[in-house]
Length: 298
Image (cartoon, rainbow, N blue to C red; front, side, top):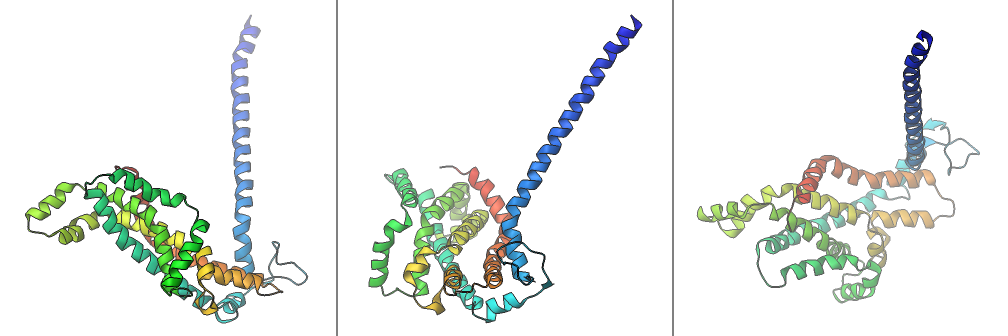
């Protein structure tokens, strides 16, 4: 009886030990899978940096990962001052995209305020029609947009590209700005009116300062969308000195029979820097704006 009771007492302990072992094994397998998956995801990012900053060994293809021979900045020198012309491309991209975001912010701030505070018939239907514009593929509007730009003599100009990017960013940004302005109590504006403030003064001193996170979030999203635009500059621009960075990368990819992958990857890294810096300095507005926008009313 004594031996049986001891074995019976040992069985739960053995089961607990076995379950702990299985649990640790499962956790270890999960972590192993996550590590392998992370390496698989990071390889496309490791290769451009490896190719841009290092010199590959002889008789080794640039298309594969390799152990570098030495560290070098020659690829960046070639991308900036050589045939890459990255400085010109970055200048054109920053001017065009920055202008488009600025135009869209001004228009959508005013339009969002009107949709938020105004009361008129078919207001909700109008908002959904504006949102419906985003469903239309950009390729479906290429011909009419090209004809409009031709009539305005804006073909092969950075202003035409900026106006096209502005038009593409307005529907989404208008909804975003309207949602953030909805979160500002109208009583604050009424108090400003009672103190003698005009409509513009109330906007500048009350509404817009309180919607600054929303403005920052909308600006970041609009910048990222316009920064990666390729098709619109492709159909509007023909002079190489007016190309934006995506077109410059495409030109460098197809213009040479002997591709310099180090230079191409250096240009790609330069292309990522402005977007990364903007997100780095404005991430607090994006986070605050996203959280506030989630609570915004209709």
